[in-house]
Figure 1 (cartoon, rainbow over the protein chains, first blue to last red):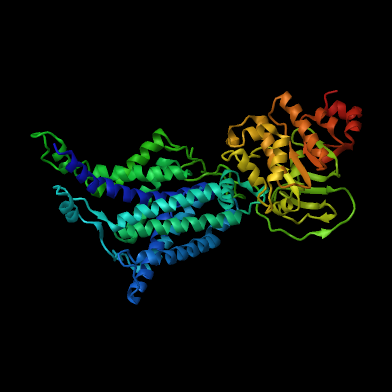
Figure 2: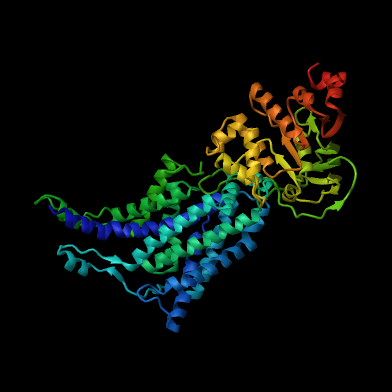
Length: 336
Length: 273
């Protein structure tokens, strides 16, 4: 038995990657849940909005890199991020003006907007591939590790190494800042409260003098910022490939629904539930169990419940279970 | 079905769409106002109106309230009482007639702009933000105000002391009578020049109803004209300076509250003898 090494191995392969992935999902799910709560439909275009935003950030990053601009140890993408966010805000506001506004004015039922957003998905998806291509893009620079596995081993003298990537650190810190800002905005500011009022009761918000179009505009801008940040963090941490972002829609929706659609706290909790489920189920536990189990009982196989190829099945199954057993999610959302 | 391509069909799946709280007031471009001096403070004059391309619901209907008055609209179910109120607030398509407020013709204004002009409206249902606290409800009522509205909030709390006690509680957790107080309080936060109440006592117990009527009289005494629709015709007419009996979208009887209560025909048809 070697609990310390077991814990280090667990942190290295499960906890830290899980927290980073969970933060990325949480940021994505927050965007989905805001659109659901305020604009009242499930925005299937969210994954591709993330892709578009990340693409804009990547193009800016390349421009900065070619100009020789950099942030030293931090990735240049952080410098390009505000430009990516600005681009995505213009993109979604333009889409809203051209597409969604028409349906909103007819008071179209949400299910129609869901299908409309699916159309927007395909258009975004096509544009992204057209501009940046369908392949993997690498835009990470700066120092790769805050702490590498080898440094950790030398420092502590343990057998297991603990690597902490710069991108993981940035993801976690950014997620905390963004979530704190968002909650402050929704609960304390006049504009944030007007968004909640509009979400609660559109007609009464109108009768209170709240301008619906302004609420919609602010919502889209926040959603654009969340999507771009989530997409860029995911791209830095893993890699950018348009199709991966389309696929991310499933774990993101699973996170939003598990937490309770329409509930921002739920979106965050859901993000971590989904991330840890995916990571723990697809992780090969041989190493950790090797330390924890008594002599002779250590497993020979990989003790991997499911191959990583099936990781989307995990979110799908969780989604099904939640919809069957507790459709309102962990934190009472608005659905059902 | 065919004339409503954006209707309700296939829209019961809440896991993809969130119809709760969706609005029904159709967006409307706001027009201009022009001066129209004289007449009562607020009047919907000869209104013929309906929804969208639908049939007329109101037929040459006139509703008015003057300064310092309480005007009450009564009538049988489906008489167009609430519709009349909504027409005055610009939520219907007016085919004929005018709405004038304080010497200004506001027929072309959108509902939002009427709020800015000083009209307060409390709908019959869904008249509070259930997920927000009582205090946030009042804050939202004061949304159009950029000045310090704490005084008004104190006044509302003085008028409805129970709300002060429950100000941090979600409004949706309150009892029916308390919700109605929140609803009226929210409308008062704009410091309206006229207050329109659509069945403020719907669904509350008789004791609470009496208390609400007392509060409404108190509001009226502060000088805000009140136009309200009421199901409890007898009690409402007792406190009314002016009463309108509507039948099938048209004025059937008009008079002071006392006159209508004394009118044998009104008594027989609407007040149960």
